[in-house]
Amino acid sequence: MTTKTNTPLAINVIAGKQYSWCTCGFSQNMPLCDNAHREFSTKKSYKFIAEETTQLYLCGCSETQTPPFCDNAKQCKTK
Ligand code: FES
Image 1 (cartoon, rainbow, N blue to C red):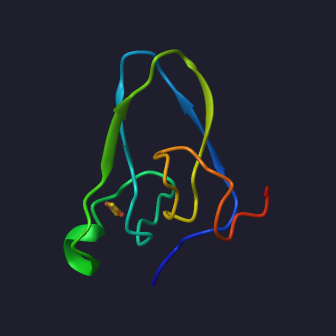
Image 2 (tube, rainbow, N blue to C red):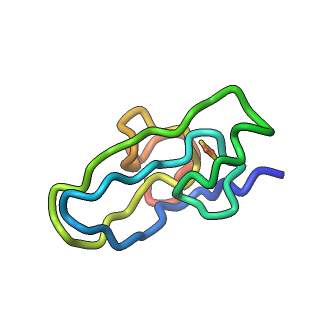
């Protein structure tokens, strides 16, 4: 079952650490990948390295054109 949301989701990141943003919407740890895509989707996670230690708001609907960040398009409530 998809766990997509239509709001950005906050995560705390550490500078220099790699993160995997969920592109399939089936992760139980949104907005980060938990490898559920291996069973439910042909999509793969989008990997990025945090530039600084901070809190980021990542796309929760998996439809953004500017991964891993919300682009305020589609179904997002922040539009
Ligand atoms: S669980 Fe969605 S991309 Fe990995």
